[in-house]
Length: 119
Length: 112
Image (cartoon, rainbow over all chains, first blue to last red; front, top):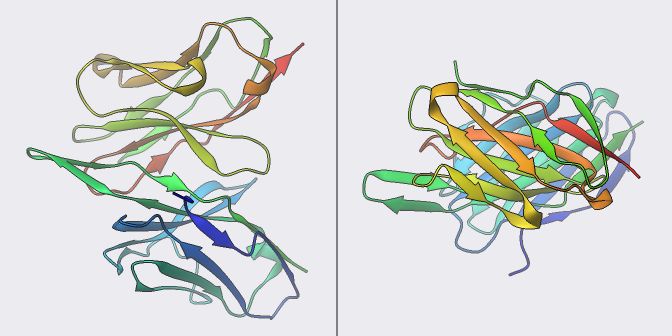
């Protein structure tokens, strides 16, 4: 298994430009998560999907951020327009729900991240 | 409120010494607990997890952690640290929603 795949690995853009980050989850996983990591704020959950449906987007900073999951094998995180304060490492993670009796649980697998720099 | 606290932001240990990284959680339901490690420039890798059963869990790279419900803790330990263990370590908790709540992380430095 190739694991979670993210592209690009590095992105440098200018303020005001549109940025699209891409993620391919592990095949068979039913959850997909987008995180942002900065020195100041640590690791923040932006949004997560279950079976391609957004469940919780309360972590999305503002309307400039949007995320989609058109199918089980692909998701995008878009920033339009980008600002210097959006510079961070963006991680995608996926997980599969395991159930045992009344207990269900997940184990998240992380991609390598996209390092975004907005000038 | 659900939260994870890692009291130590930065820890330095000598190579070969033992290590303990602290993690305390606040979670209303049965917690599922994880430790992840992040090497510089890399993504997060799962070290170990606790779902149920034996409260002492073994992970990769010689790490172990003990779940203590009475203390709401899930401390990570390693008997002898190697220079390659230098990294940032994250404790996390989840229930059955799939959503992870992370601590702020502990950066481990290993002295030769």
